[in-house]
Image (cartoon, rainbow, N blue to C red; front, top):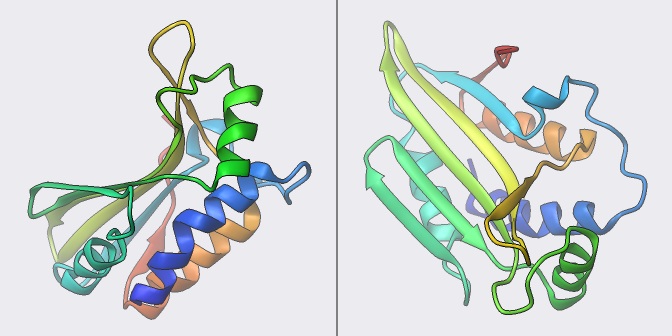
Length: 158
């Protein structure tokens, strides 16, 4: 998975979140914003690529274990304003684009779940997770998974 792809993914989420009519992700709502992939071995390039890409001002990278990595990035000002207004957000705690990789060793390889969403802190407290239903984002991520040697797997419905 190229660093360039990962650098583009979080801003792409922002651009899609700001669009009025993105092409839909045809999956059920419980599967939107989640992809799963199987790799023959631990995909170090995928994890390392995201870690390298998550280095812009305002980005927050957490890597509590070898198989878990989370990158949170700030949207541009216009997208942040749109998300705050559209989802009753807070101006003192900005929305963040979130991409989390969670992996585990499986027989014959390594399973990675990609979870991408927008976290919008709420004016009334707590936060709302916004999942972007966009076919372009899904295909971009799936193409990158395949180029990295992964096999895209169906996301469980439960």
